[in-house]
Length: 279
Image (tube, rainbow, N blue to C red; front, side, top):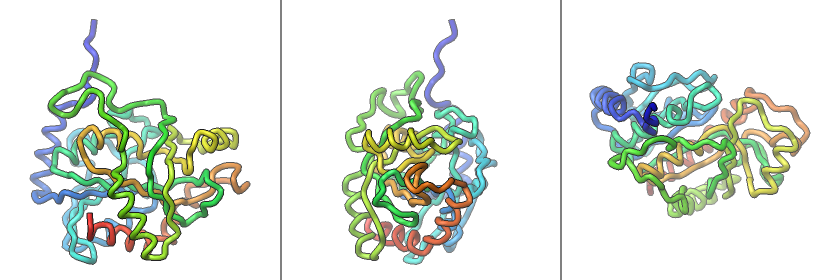
């Protein structure tokens, strides 16, 4: 009988780590994963160095419009150094979740301690509007998959990681206070992850609302699970790009997501800059 597969290919991870550390030898302790339409933050960094993720052994290719596939290390407007992951991997692209989350294992191996995870999400909460921001205080995993399934390597993380605080309470309060100080439309809420790539039906959105979701999307949760497993501090921020199916009556498109993300880019960068000053 064939033995179960490990939840991470440790040899491939070590090879990838060596490759990244050679190309980007001074990786900061804080990284940000940029969601759909939010990649412009990486382009705004100065004194930057970059590596194409396609050159990293074992790193899956991103196939979604608006996800370039680069790691960029540079300084923001206040001189704070940051690693920006410009382009994420989604399960709906055909990858199992253990592959989707390979970048998170790699970030941890490269010394990242603080992980900011951003996404574009649809509003389930009727009090939200496109262009608002939501600081994620908890999540619901309706993908019904877990990236840690498989044989566990104890040296990498615990078999049963605790998920009582997947998002750092300290960072949640920091993000909310900075958002309010900037005068941004910002909320705290629950993010619901689904597999995609089709948008949800009206009935599915009504169900999500009834079980406590405020926003819904097709990413983030697998990454957070692995980040918690790797003992990172996590902050999650959603850019509300549209009202979910049935909330407003409008039909949905990916073009709407990128249009709203572009519209709020100055606000988004200002919020991240303020958080980075105090993280």
